[in-house]
Image (tube, rainbow, N blue to C red):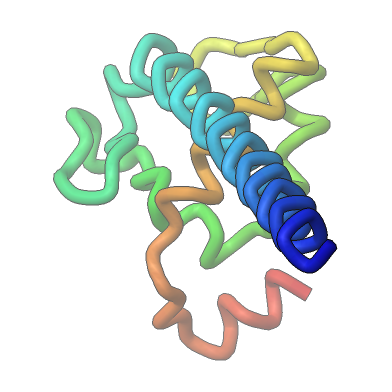
Length: 124
């Protein structure tokens, strides 16, 4: 009886661990898709990785966007079209799943904030 209970508990634990790792894998897959999207659409101006400079010094590195904006607040702009004050920047409109992927990637590369108090006030 105890052996059957232990086997059942072990199976449940393995299932739970597998379900958790599936969720992590799905999130990683989403972030990977987001990385591809930003490399294809944004890397010609922005730094889109954890390190390095972008080709355009005026374009903010994506790893620092979280210092000025909550990343999730970019969803609407990504879905409806990001419009910037820079005439060289094209207007991008992404599908909802692509928006989720981009946001997952951006969240994954944000630097630990060393922002000054003014930047923190902008975030709130």
